[in-house]
Every structure is written in C-alpha cells, then in structure tokens.
Length: 218
Image (tube, rainbow, N blue to C red; front, side, top):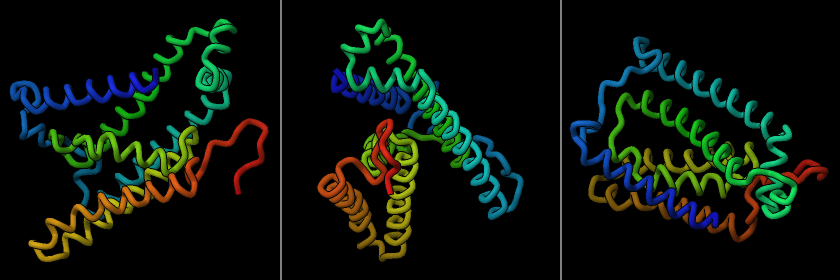
C-alpha cells in the first residue's frame, strides 16, 4: 500500500510541475517567478549570507525540537505502532487513515517551510528548481543515507549529500568548458556510489532509528 502512495505522490508532483511550467498566466511558465524579496537582502553580500544562514539554523532547530517532542509524545508512539503493525493498531481502535493524513499534512508543512526558505534564498522559483532529480530523489537519498525514522539521521544525511553535491559543482565549474559539461554527471555518479556503499555496508543508515529501550548508538 505504501508503494502505491509513493507512486501516486510522484505522479501528482510531476503533474503539478508540468502545470507550473506551462501555465504562464499563473506561474510565469519557464521564466518562473522572479524578484522575490529576501530577508536581510539590504545587507552586504557576506553579512546577508550569514544572517540568512542563522535564520535557517534557528528554524531548523525549532522544527527539530518540535518533531522530537511529537515523536516522544503519545501521538508519536501511536504513529510508530501504526507503521510497525497496522492491523494491531486498528484492533486497538486507532483511526489509521486519519492518522496517516495527519502525518502527511505534518510532513507537507515542514516541506513547505523548507521550500519557502529555498525560494526566498534564491529570490526566484522556476520549474528547473523543482526538478525531480533534486526535489525528489536527492531527498530520498539523504534520508536513506542518514537513517530513516531518525530526525538526527535525516539532518546528517541532508548535510552530507548536499556538501557532496555542492562541492562537486564548485569543482566542475573550475574545469574547462568542454570537460565541465561531462564532469557535471560525475557528481550524480558519486551520489549513487555513496548510496550503494551505504546500502551494502550499513543498510539502516549512518544513524539508524533507536528502538525504545535500546541503548544509544555509539
């Protein structure tokens, strides 16, 4: 059932992306929306970058603490019970579909916050900015690498993958033009190789989910 949900979600996301790309009157089409104001945009370049980084870190810490509180609350234990054994949770009177919808809305709200930060940082949004390679599969790789079911693992996976992605882009930009075009595909290879190594030697992720009552991972 979760596979069908994933397929349907990807399909809906692709439909939305194509609508954004084609409806000029609504989204600006391939040109997108430009001139979006950015917090601290009136500062010089470096102070503006540092101030925005501070804002992102504050929001990240706030979101992390709120999610951790939810995970440790009865609501979080109920969601884990539904994930681990849906039939048993339903037999105990839990409304499975309603709880799934709650989790979906909660996750969508967090992604919306991240998207808002991303758009205001770039001061524009275009169809290329939500390319499935970055907006879907790269995020999945971050989660798999860090460890699913673990908020710290998700943050760690995101940091590792994005550092690899960004550093490799900076390195390829310094190469001659005829080589740089082909070298850009090398970072996709590096990300894929990293994922394969993690799945081979640590399939639970760098920071796997800690079960209740188990000692912390060292």
